[in-house]
Length: 402
Image (cartoon, rainbow, N blue to C red; front, side):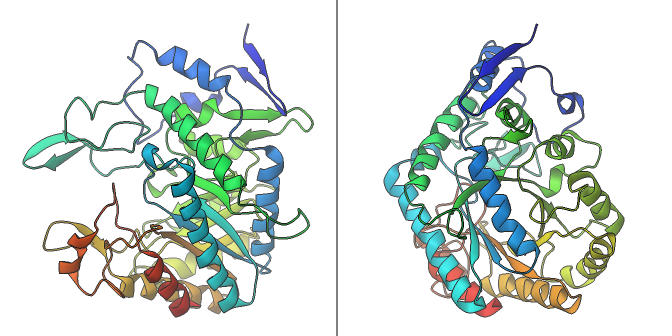
């Protein structure tokens, strides 16, 4: 008999979800851990991190953007750390989201649906299972939900107990984010909401809950989850799971995506053609976007899917500096985002906004604006994974693109 756990708004029944039997890439190797089953059971019985009413409000805000009546901003760290889940740090991040969103609203004359890359951005896909650190091959750092950033082979082991740490850290962040909410449900002012890439299936699946009133399934780890470029295979677990949940959802779309595949993703994830249900997050690189994006926009519009179109102009424009550090050039970020906007508007679609990796402090990880050249990167290069804009650079991107 499956075990049923009653919660305030939800019921969760511990049965094997069908998508958990499907192939999935980028997953941790930890099922041999002696406490794995106990950890999964504890997560399955935990309270939701977000409420279904909050999720529906976020979806309503995205629906306005899908209809061309609002803009969207997703902004935050490349990878969160457990140590940053304190009220002061979270408050600083929220204020940064609000500040950049206010600039976007000022530039466009439209309200902005605001999402922080926080309260769950603890796992990262990697292009290789191993990385070389100081001449030593180590398992790749996959975010603190999976392993440690420390350069030690034992610290890099995949540990399922970290899922519980991620849950506790996310809960602390969500509490602080809620403290910053203002306005009523009738206004587009309920955010910022939280968002992250729903990468680790063991963690995300354990936090799916059923709304007792409607029977809908919600992923309660976040308001707005997205599928990454590396995990959007049509017949894999991530797409199957996202098709089953009622959250607003996003999918990263890179330069290798073809129009037929993207339309098929829309059919699977937005079968009822619902405004605000599906956001396509375009990450193609400043050169490829000109060729790859127009046919995709035309195909999706021809298929009648009212998706939200936003640009992630960062992930396709990462380069390696002479020092060996990864970096991005603000000029390249602006170039791709500007091309994205031009293409969307040429095709008669709404270029809703941006998805940016931005620190809440004055880091020096991307070149441009207050970071004059690659030599300046060493001053405050603090990221755990990919290079982030600092607040001044982010505002410069908004001003240049919109």
